[in-house]
Image (tube, rainbow, N blue to C red; front, side):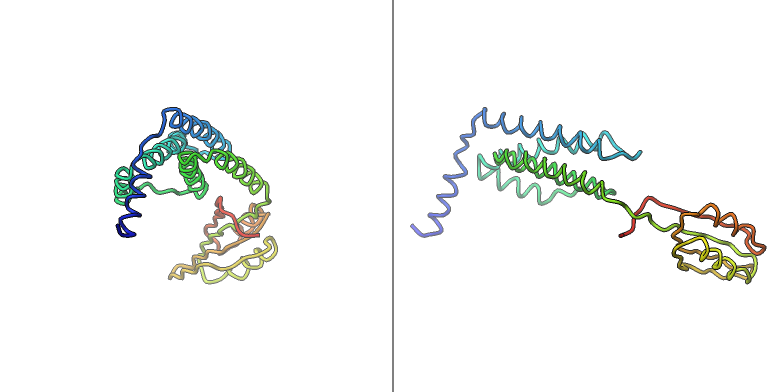
Length: 224
């Protein structure tokens, strides 16, 4: 018998036993369910914004159980293992994950299912503990406020110097991002870092050449 045949026989004997007890399956799924319930509540606690989706949270938690079932099936039979690999290789998920935090919880949920399916419960529990601590520790770090966008429409070619003087007075930092020149005037967009946005825009709109001014903010962050 060649080395290849020996390895093939060994693999077939190892994966073809299929002697996974009901107790082992129930235990793995029960631990996975408890951890999925934990992930569900941590996600609900972390997602404080109005974009929280209960359906997404439930689906993400149940993914752990589905993944654990797949891993348990792959341990029992090599045919199922190869079938799972082939099936998962052609599956394409088109749902876009817009928030990086959602991606973290999805990966955590899938990883929990894989680890519990393999019977490594201590690793799954310690992972849940350390991931949770890490999330809340990083959430406590101070965040730098992102700059605002100042949009100004001028009726003529004058007044730009006065706008820049006001930005220098009321802002820590400003930078011209866009300039659109027409026959009727100039449209300017500045990136402004200021804590006195209301005062700044009130004084800009009082300038003679300014027909419209808007200060736009977003929920993004900048690196400190």
